[in-house]
Image (tube, rainbow, N blue to C red; front, side, top):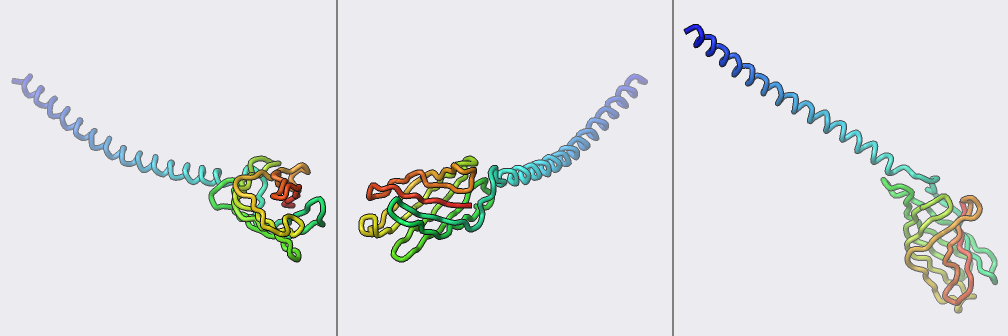
Length: 173
């Protein structure tokens, strides 16, 4: 009889302690989930801020824009770089050069890929009376601007125009 009472008391204590432990574990899971979620939110913010920081210098703002060919004087204008929010080394750009009946327009996207190279995707349209009597010539697609003076001036590498002559199109910082 004493064994039965002890056995029943033991079973009762075990069942009571097991059910209490389960409740405690569930509460801890909820708390740890909240902690993990807050850590993940902070990591996401940190990663996003790192991802949006430039690897190279910030080119935001207005810069000098030049056009010249072997038989013309140098024409100047400006080009504006607007940093794309949340992206690293990426800019929307637009600018123009106007001098009399000469004009050059640039509009598109610029990605800085190294300290000496930028890839431009968009259109560069020029109307120069000395070239095909001012017939517009447009360069479309992705083009490279490269610097040979330590990043002060970047020159378009697609230099041959529609008339077969060399153009120098530069962006100066």
